[in-house]
Every structure is written in C-alpha cells, then in structure tokens.
Image (cartoon, rainbow, N blue to C red; front, side, top):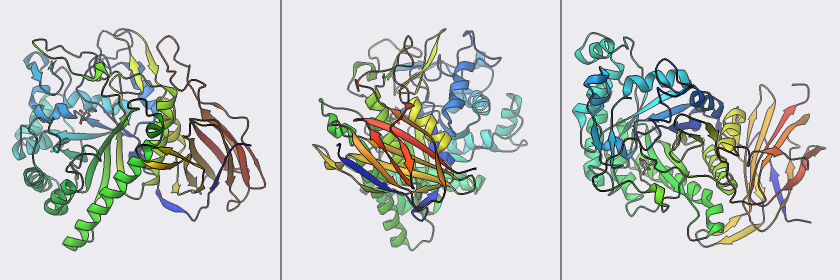
Length: 506
Ligand code: AHR
C-alpha cells in the first residue's frame, strides 16, 4: 500500500470563475522568440506576412489567451517608433538588456497582425526605464486612437486604419530590479507610473493598467515595494504584477518539486499588501494580481547568459532551456496555484512562448516541436472551465530545505455546472514513491469518468527533442476508476494528472 492522498471536491468550495486570461503567454524581443520564432519570412511554412504558420498552429493548440509584448527587460530601452513604418526606414539598434542587435523588422503593427492570427488578446508594455509619460501616451495614441490625430493617422498610413484596441497595458517592466535599464527606487517608480497611468487614463479611462510589482518573492524590497507603489498609484491602476521563475538548484530536487509553495506565498503576500493599502486609503476597489511572467528557468546555465564584448548578434540562441518530465510536473503545479488564486489573479503570462524558456521550439528553416511543458498548459487551458473549486486535501508530506514541510500532493478542480464537466488537476510532487489517490465526489450527482491522463517518466530528467518530440507526453492512467462517487487510482512519483468527469448523459 502506498501513502494515501485524499481529496474532497464539492461545488460549494467555489473560488471564482475560471479566467481565460490565466492562460496568457509572453513574446519578447529576446533571443529567437520573435526572429526565427514567430517570424521567419524564409521558412517554408511562412505566410504572406512572414509568420511561421507551424508556430501559429501550435500557439492555438496551446490554448493561449493573451500575449504580453514587446518585453521584458528589452522594453526598458525600447523606442516603439523604431518598429513602425516602412521597413527600409527602420533603424537597427543595440538592445542593452540582451546585448543583441534589434533589427526592428517586427514592431507593434506586425505583432498585432500576428496576435489576430494567433487569436490572442494583446498586452502591451510601455518603456518606463529610459522613457516616460510622453512616450507612453504616444504609443497608446498610435495603437488605439481613432484616426484624425497625427499618431493614429500615421498608424493608418502604415496599413492599420482601425484602432488596435489594446486594453491591457503594463507600466514598465521589473523596475525593482537593479539589472533593469533605468532601474528605479520604489518612490521614483511610483511617481512615474502614477503619472503615466493618469495621462493614459485621460486618453482612455477604460484601459486596464498594470503597475510593476516585484521581480520575485526573494527581492530585498519585496512587500515594501508593492506598499509604496500602490500607496501612490492605487486609484490609477487595476493590477500589480508578480514575476517568478523556478529551477532545481544545486541538486535540491525536493525544494524544486515544492516550488508552487512559493507561488502560493507570493500571491497571498501581494494580495495582503494590496488589501493593506486599500484599508489605509479607505478604498472600495481591490487591486488584482497580474502574474505576467512565470515559468521554470535555469538561469545559472550558460545559454542564459547574454553575449558580451564587441559582438552584438541578431536573434542569438538565448535562454533555450530544455524541459524535463520533472519540469513539466512543477510547471503543472504552478498552473494549479494560479487557478487556485483565480479570485485575485486576474491575468497571467507564461514566459515565454517560443524558443526562449518556451513550450514551443523551432529550428531556423526547419522543424517545430513541443516541449514537455506544452502538455500541462494546453490540457489545463482546454479543460479548466466554469468555476474554480478549492480542493480539501489530506496528504502525506515531505521535507525540503526551502519550505520545510510540503504536502506530497496538490490539486485544484474546475466545475462547469452548465455542461456538467468536472476536471481535477493533481500532482504527486513527492519523489519517494506513488500515492494512492482517493477523491470524494459524493457532492456531485451522477458523474462518469471521461478520461484520466498522467504525465510521468521513469527518468524525471528526460526531455522532448526535435528528433524525439513525444518522449514525454501525458498517457492514459488505467488505474483511475470511479465507483459510488469515489475516484481511486495511483499517482506515480513526480507526476501531473488531469482527471475529467462529466454528468452522465451530458
Ligand atoms: O523572461 C525573461 C526575462 O525575465 C524578462 O525579460 C524579464 O522581465 C525577466 O527578468
């Protein structure tokens, strides 16, 4: 007998409706994300605009809802004007963030054309590193204003007569980070973000504006930063951002497997700080969280370091992390954490979409394939419907250096009352062995099991490659069965599962 993981799922344990924006991603001018990622005019699959249709197809299959653009660290030195207008007049420039040359072949209008084809909502970040209020207003007017003023007429002349209608705007990127071009103290950032937001709202009061929060929960200014920024910007913004990347460090597998504990702590702390400011200012409105960068990222690996010296390459190989089966399990657990916080996480962006710490990989001129992380994302995006339900969990625990004691299992569920679809997302994040799963579903009448899939590999470090793209894919879990309102089965060590049920006859 394996240790038992017991879950109780009940339609009364409602958190919030599933938000489509939880399934956002991110396209930055970084490495090969844009050039030879989404855009490669010479590729056999390229369409009339130079976009790789093989990548577009996988983006749609991934179930991406929104895409943040154009950065990232890149945006803090970016001049948006460089990327619009006739191609032959666009300047090449040094990108200081990634020590690369930006050719500006793709800019705002091209991105919007791509977003339309990919069927995703755009989220645009303005540069508050080297630039300020005026440029934020300019790019907003260029993107969104109806024709009749200089900048919108310029957009029309460049081939986009209709407003791009971008609703979500990030006020800079990771301005708390000393690595950021134009890095600021919390007070300095609070000032410029508030003024940019005030001006942008004068242009269009209905925008959804996102202030920069902390770059991770370990930042020395974490907590104090959010407090200072929101105290000044509260009335002008809708969301505050959170960013987090996780990896196995120094062979500490157990702490890595428990990474979602940090995401839970991070979100809970940002929400507590935002609500503290709300109380202090005596406001009704609640600030939501935009978790607009999250993923697994092995930052200590060589390919994560930008080139240096005299060489300023165009679209170098950068941050092309290869994800293992274990990475996909931790990744699936991060999605569980995001869903569980749907009451306060209004938007999230997987960083990034293609080639750069990405679920989709490409060869220049060649193949496209799915990394292991593609699978939990696409399955969660496709099947998380209706209401998010908190799951009551009785679980064995395991010890780890970073968090002390963590539960071996973690889970969340979604329930679509209309269609009768109930989906349980569950991980066994304990390396020591399988868990005997028992799920009490007696609160739901007349369910049948539709499908149970488990992502697991005997070797947790094995990955998908261009030559063997299906090495790690979710497989049917034949141990899962439903009888008398109770699900039972086995979850292998280090595994992520999706269990789909539906009302009988639905
Ligand atoms: O996603 C890669 C980088 O990580 C982004 O450019 C930056 O915002 C973060 O530090």
